[in-house]
Length: 296
Image 1 (cartoon, helix red, strand yellow):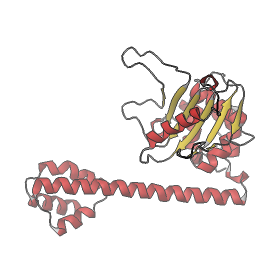
Image 2 (cartoon, rainbow, N blue to C red; image 1 turned 180 degrees about the horizontal axis):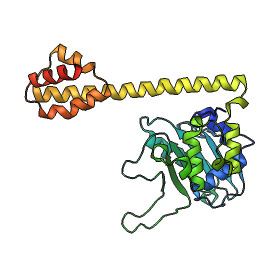
Image 3 (cartoon, rainbow, N blue to C red; image 1 turned 45 degrees about the vertical axis):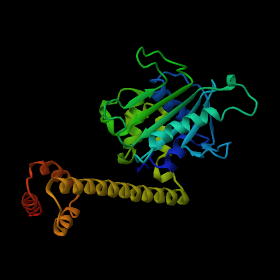
Image 4 (cartoon, rainbow, N blue to C red; image 1 turned 180 degrees about the vertical axis):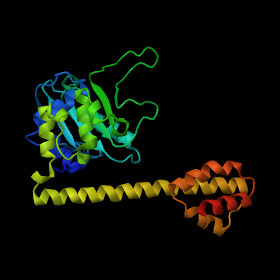
């Protein structure tokens, strides 16, 4: 077997957002939002395209959107790259979903809770090693909650999840392992088969069950993801290089064209090494010696 990555937009929607995915999504949300407790018994999966009623508002494209039996709306987004203003977009989508519940003339009593669940393939909160983090309105000093059930943000940071297959214990562990490791598996592990909904999700993710059109669409998304990842990596390296050049010039004086060309030829690891070594330089000659030694 070969399993598709749930991180792609196409795969995530197919696994969690199709008409046949209600039981899968219920199990997943109970695991992540309610620590494995069977709080959610039923839900309705609705069109994740959230069109603004007001022309001045931006449209939102989400991966999955569901309304629970208690009228709570859950919006789910799988985010592969940490793009500019990503954190603001998360808040925007949450607030717009909350506001757009009201029809013209309806009172605020018609507003129902909204939960924003964001899964990231990058570390978002470096100050904590928690894989799942939850946020709501809270008084700053006394930690008094304000309308806790109305607006809530949850994040799952996949890079922070380091458990091996044999270490999986909770339902959340198994779902997060599936999200992160599905493409590396060759069969459905017995530990994953213990959860019928996860076994079903893995069967949906089995590449052998996809049509030619679905495989082509998936391939295009994977190529786009790799291209986008390369663009972001290149942009970060360029930013690091430009910052380093400015620091060196401020510390050592005007840099020659040969020095600039040598630094532009360094990869990310070389730039990091130079950024650490530069504080020991007292002249351009020190820099030249370091570049010669590093390239040699």
